[in-house]
Length: 193
Image (cartoon, rainbow, N blue to C red):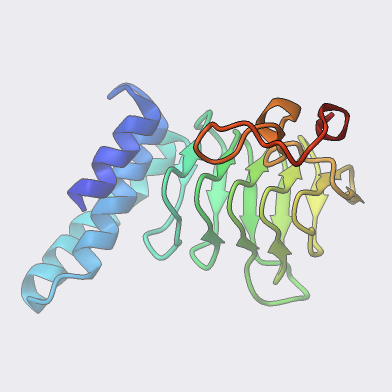
């Protein structure tokens, strides 16, 4: 638990950030649920349940310990965030304020969100869908169907723009250099742009 809290602190860099406190309660809840000593797990689970009642008021985030997130998950602006316990996030995902992620009334199941996904302000992502790696969900969009990797989803209902995300796109300068920083002689500068 403490390693995850340390990583969360590295993401937020402030004890005053409300999203950090929401993630701290989330990590505490996950830790308490994994305890093997049943009486202590029961007691700490009750403490978590009590604190979770007040968490949306003080942190602006209604997230449950059953939600799964990868490394470096970031809530950019806490406030009005509601995430269903069944949602799964990959690594390095970010969400803005007033975001709702959860189930759809006609399709049971929750979204599975890949790595490097960003969800803009006021977006609603619902249903048993998959958001591909590197996708970008624009502000105030309604997404209730699969979004392919590196795509931009924008509008109500969302329209998919393939290969428009730019979140994972290689820059022209990066294409000229290999992993160790050596110049890639197999590519022409015009091809990198």
